[in-house]
Image 1 (cartoon, rainbow, N blue to C red):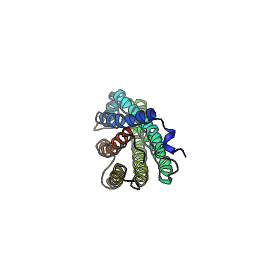
Image 2 (cartoon, one colour):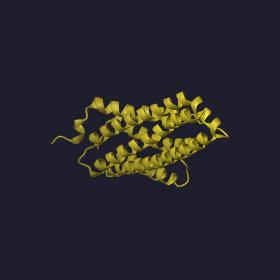
Image 3 (cartoon, helix red, strand yellow):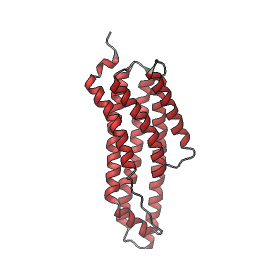
Image 4 (cartoon, rainbow, N blue to C red):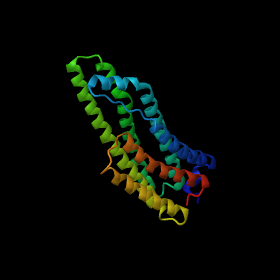
Length: 223
């Protein structure tokens, strides 16, 4: 009987493994260059947003691209691991929904706020007050979406890890490490606000797990 992981060719497995490693590292590099706008009043704040519009769009556009690449690589990992395993099947929709939620957060921070600033930067006091309300709404959407995404990512990692701990050797070690990352990321949400610095801390933990999975795929042992 053909094993499920035979569906994924060795070449696809290696490409997916390298994708996980490279995307994790690049995501951290890009996150470290995330621009932050400051301003004591609405007009100054909007001017700062517009001044950083290009790097802000590049950062968030790049992060979206890497999230999509990671989602594909983890799909390959799941197929290679085997869809006959219930935790693997359950992990995929959780992770995919998390990617969609994080994309919403990135679009709001990277593009919607810039549109609002461009629309209201030259407005009167009433327009600037309206812009403040819209920025507050954008921040709320960003935080809800980002927190929801991290919870879903953690749930997916926990499910993949529960499947891995049923094996021996490196698979079990990877599974235990994944459970630690999942619990740590979820617990962090109770004490860390997901602003740029907070999101970077969570991203480091997720990247460690992602690199570990990528290296494990490159070694070529599904079970």
